Length: 439
Ligand code: ADP
Ligand code: ASP
Ligand code: MG
Image 1 (cartoon, protein in one colour):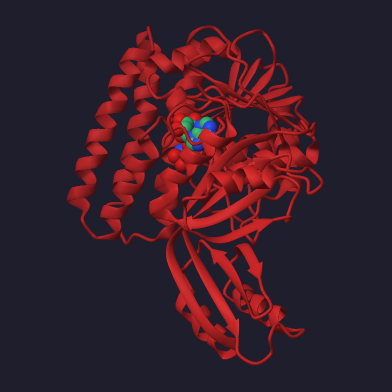
Image 2 (cartoon, protein in one colour; image 1 turned 180 degrees about the vertical axis):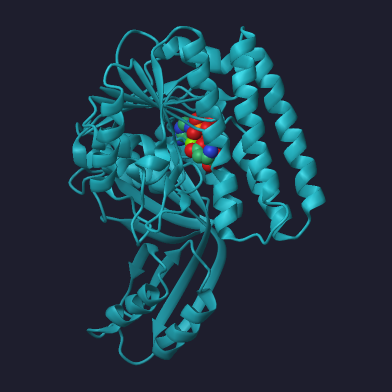
């Protein structure tokens, strides 16, 4: 069985939903994971912000506007009054539910319930549309099987067992539709897998059912060799190793959620990135096969802070690094890049929630300096150390950019540069010009 995930733009209008329906009805049994219609989750976040600020009038205005949009989508999507009415009733109930939260205290718990509404509505709309078309489609409620544990990590054993039970209820359905992004946490409360997390849902489901393939359908023809939002002329990369895709996703390639690669990699299930706007384009295949001798792509991750600790007495004596890392660990702050010298160490982090406490603790071990508004540029491909010349090519592209840190050798697949955020565009463009042959 294949698992297909369609992102927000792919289900962003009644017309797009009809096209997705056409794409998925080929007679093969499959699980289809859907995001909320594009813009909806952002609007739900906005509504929550108003409610946090105790402004129910502001929230109600946005709720009413969003509901009106959905009424229009429903009118465009269905051809029969029966399905129009049935879906309108469902949507009205969900919006009334959202409105009920404008009257009481508002916490993280209520926010999670509001954020879940986008996926609950989009999946209801598409399932009803398929049923109206006579397709044997069934809605699988993600809140019945998608669950995280006490560390907020997905619980694969629970997911596998509960999903199998849901599938067994309707063994002959042609299409199982389910919600991306949403889940329950260890306490049974409604929660989510973080923004963009529908990709993660798809790969968790793929691993749970041992799918033959996981397809991520979006608005571009696969992983491009550079960020198409920033750089002129980028091209799709046809094939990536799981590790390469994971590095690119982690270091900023928005097309894939950073956590999405891992479950597929461990279960050895190929992931294909495909374009809903151009369904016949080959896209990108992510698998365990490597393609030697190539730099494949570049990505950038913003909002990075660099911290340098210059050792006062111990000069990288044994135990120094352990003490430094323990400080980051005690504040649950993960480190992205590390560089060492004889007298000190530089690290980069993206979570600055406990920056002040971390800096205070680090100052016990040496002189500490901080650079903010930095950015990691990650060059990905076959970067095994025995390959000669690839690092030089990447460095050459960076020759006019001030570089704060360089990291190479951590994996066989990446070389990373830490630069100022303001130099990002120039760096990405120069890397494209030097490494890829995009006309
Ligand atoms: P979806 O809503 O389908 O999940 P996303 O917006 O999350 O889609 O991801 C697709 C977008 O990712 C593309 O429209 C593109 O602008 C952006 N993107 C960033 N980097 C890359 C890259 N290297 N290759 C392809 N797309 C990228
Ligand atoms: N709808 C959620 C979001 O916008 C999840 C997703 O689209 O992957 O973040
Ligand atoms: Mg996405």
